[in-house]
Image (cartoon, rainbow, N blue to C red; front, top):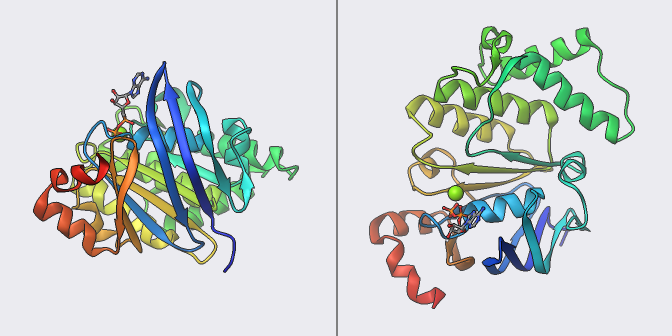
Length: 253
Ligand SMILES: Nc1ncnc2c1ncn2[C@@H]1O[C@H](COP(=O)(O)OP(=O)(O)O)[C@@H](O)[C@H]1O
Ligand SMILES: [Mg+2]
């Protein structure tokens, strides 16, 4: 068996003196899309932040391996350079910085830290147009300041485009249903489906089953009280929709 893209072993995470993750075990093989579902407050976002290396998320036990290499000692930007991408639940607004400029800076920061040459503007423009074309994204919005006054769908377009340009090995998408109108839902699912590749894996974190009608995952994991309490195929998402999360709570106790 080849090295999994992401392997999480017995992960315990503490946030401000409170243990939120209580032993997460998860293996995402290369090329697979896995979904994590769970009620609000179960620790899903804490998991994504701990993987991304956000400050304040202290790993007290366990390990996280990206393509066979432990990343827990790495800073967030080093993890990103190693091929990890986290799509934020609440996108940041950057007034005064055109989306295009932001994308170029993000891309070049990663290239630089990998010891690669920076991409010049013409080459970058070509890459953006190609990626935008693939994803059916209008490039007009890229002249506007990042996320400032963007609709839900536009925010997702900027995010998916960033994901396409950075070409990460492991993508984590943390989605609340409230942030996703029909347009945004379509953008995210088309983007994810388009970026599926044998050498790329994705973890889609969601509260509702609806997103998984469009992104059909290879595996579904149910999260409860800081742990995965059940794993199964895509049909598990339908089961959750029908029975609700409470049916899985006993498994966590
Ligand atoms: N910065 C924080 N400080 C203290 N508690 C937090 C913080 N962030 C999250 N929590 C707590 O951690 C738990 C899990 O939250 P979260 O990971 O956001 O869950 P989910 O994404 O599944 O809704 C909740 O009980 C929440 O109150
Ligand atoms: Mg969350």
